[in-house]
Amino acid sequence: MEQKDNIEKPDSNENVENPEAMNNEPNKDSNDMHVNPEASAHSENAAQDDSQEKDGGLGRRARRRHAERQMEELTQKVEQMGAKLQEMNEKYMRVYSEYDNYRKRTSKEKTDLILNGGKDIIKLMLPIVDDMERALANMADGDAAKEGMALIHKNMLNALSQKGLKPMDAKGQKFDENFHEAITQIPAPSPEAKGMVIDVVKKGYFLNDEVLRFAQVVVGC
Image (cartoon, rainbow, N blue to C red; front, side):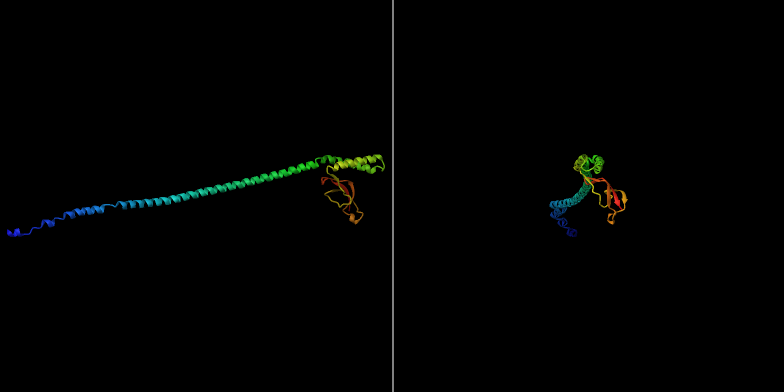
């Protein structure tokens, strides 16, 4: 019995854990589970910065594409306006050229009308002048009628010359089809007379330096 009593009983204090240690372990675990607020805020800010950076990059690309599209549209509009301007300039030049030609043509017509307005009347009077000259050629010198006829002939030629009429000097000139009309040909009296106007059958006239009537001539051959 004494031996049983002598059996050492385990110390209850050794089997009992230190209450402070037991209390500290849960606190340690709770500290491990606790998140630092500053670190969490920093992480959130970093995430927001990354998101904003991504959004900013997308926004810049979108703005760049939009600017490129606007530039293309403006370029197309400028090209279209340039084409329209060129077309309008070509139309203006055509209209201006047509108007300038019309102005020159009408101005020339007016000038011709002023200078040659009586062309038909003067041309009708030329046969009268021819008759007066033939009459004077057949009248005897010293005849009072001849003197009167000569005076009338002179006054008529003076009046017609004021309108631009000028007689053509054809006799002795080289034949020119631009001024002369060959009625006949005769043997030339000399080698130098070949192709020359030997005689004038009907006198030619200029009106303002233009041929009003061709001279009818005899040409040496």
